[in-house]
Length: 79
Image 1 (cartoon, helix red, strand yellow):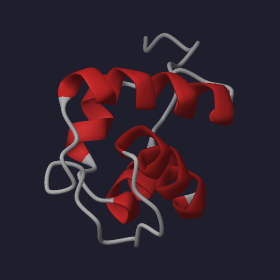
Image 2: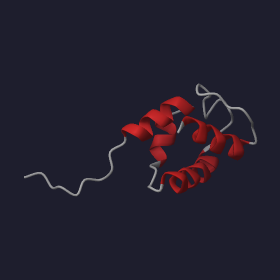
Image 3: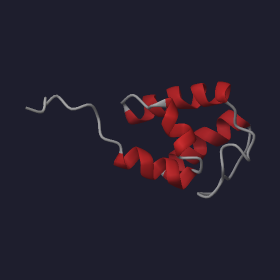
Image 4: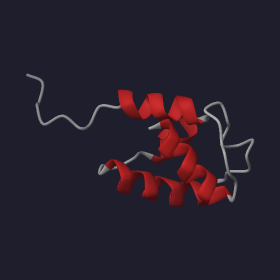
């Protein structure tokens, strides 16, 4: 997952060989690019990706971890 995130970020930012500790903001990522990245990641993962996750997980590694830990919406209703 980290390598795919790095690839998507690199393509959006015009950079190559991003590492796992690269920061979206420090690389020059902004909110407009984040929307493009979110769409590409959603296509790759075959699920919706919250825009907040892109800023919560500000590095490749932390975003991968957040995506892996993210719970989808539950169909169960608490009683």
